[in-house]
Length: 289
Image (cartoon, rainbow, N blue to C red; front, side):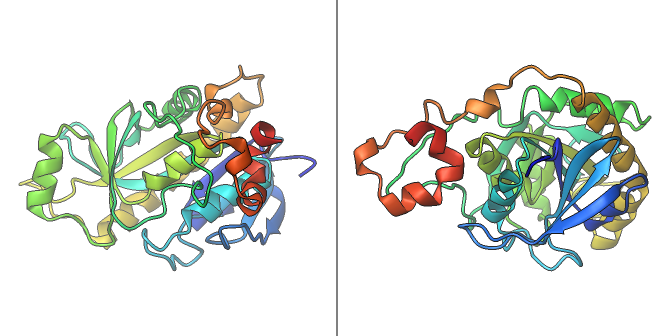
């Protein structure tokens, strides 16, 4: 795009109806990994172009496992986005992370089992570093943007991604707590890892909707509970996005995420199949040409 989005938001379709979003256009894209969950909506917000993608499709058509995470990240890369903020629901595994609070996690535990986790393969191998899975530059900016809305925000926390679509058993929830994890959800993995492979900054705005099923004095999580809390938090999410866009409009220092593949590709260049090289040109072209 001639005017690429300064920020991409992956979340619920309710975020599209943001006050102040103008000059809206939709991009129905096809990637080498298939179609993304929905057309990408791009509009102007606070004077900047911003992209929105409904992770589960408008109307919530895809389970967490069915989401085409590779196509979603690739499509945003095609539009020239360099930064992604995931707006998602999560359950709390800690008493102090109460429903209605917003967490900006700094660590991620992938406990999924049935998802495509990488763009690489088919003759091209890359081992990307994800010791710090969330962007160390974008995450603090996201935290400050949320905090400025007046919401109760937590800076940091370990996020476990389970397969879903079912919720946890009490035994599982107890184990995750014993592991020292803070919040639980179904979509952060492999989304964060694919964003790193695509050399895109990625942060998560996780909205606590419930206490999972471990809390003895609270009702176990239900769909109604999740939706009710998310709807109540929509205004906070919208204000935080505006705040973040305004901050990003200021000049930002270069981020290591943008060169995550510099030392990651291990395959001998003359052994990479031409078809694979072409398929991943958007991601690896600057290293292989």
